[in-house]
Each structure stands twice: as structure tokens, then as C-alpha cells.
Image 1 (cartoon, rainbow, N blue to C red):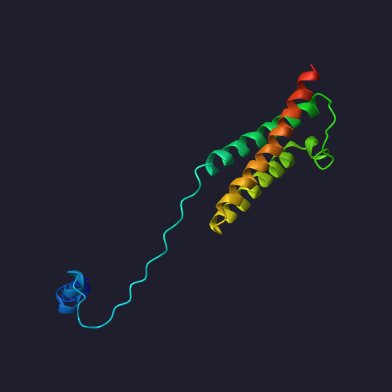
Image 2 (cartoon, rainbow, N blue to C red):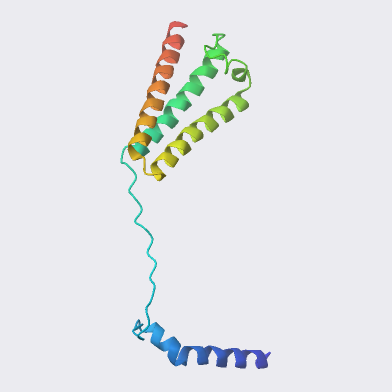
Length: 146
């Protein structure tokens, strides 16, 4: 066991004391040769409106899911024919709601990363506007059913 430790320790000491390693460590790279330095482009900042819009979308989608399932339990008809059967299976319904919410946010993030920040904000504003209208309609139907 000792035989392995001594050569490894000597190797480590030799590397640390070697003149090329020491000169690289002190930051002096002026050896007369050209050096290439690669810098990553600065990351553009995310528009300040996007995070609140994302949170608003999550909240609106959650309320839409809650009100849809509550209306279904009260025997109210579902206005969206694509969701009608799903409202009877809550797990599948919530999976679809989560997937649609994630998809809208991911597509908006892709717009932002492709340097289309204004379009990203506009897409989320439109998405939230549609969801707000759906949520308001659901609230009105649930209120009138009492």
C-alpha cells in the first residue's frame, strides 16, 4: 500500500513544482505566442413581465380546472366538447391541463430565447386573456347554478 502512495505523492509534487505549471498558475501567458480567448455572448435578460404572466397563466389554468370539475360534479354541461369526457376522469383532466400550461410556457420561453421577447410577452398576454375569459365564464355559470 505504501508503494502506491509514495509515487503518487512524488508525481503530484513534480506537477506542482514544474516550471510550466507554475507559470500558468501565476497568470502570465506572455510567451510571445498568440492566445485565443473564447467568450460566451451575454445572456439577454428576460422581460420582467414574463414571470408574472407565467404565474397568472398557472393560476388561471388551475381555476379553470377546478371550476370545470366542480361544474361537472354539479351536473352542469361542459361548454368545450374536447374536454367533456375528460371532466369525468379528473386525473386525465389535470394531466391535460398541466400539459397545456407547460406547453404554452415552453413555447413562450422558446420565443424569448430566439430573441423575440416582444412576441413572447404578446403570446402570454393573449393566452392569459383567453384563459381569463374562460375563467370568468366558468365563474358566472357556477354562480348562476346556485
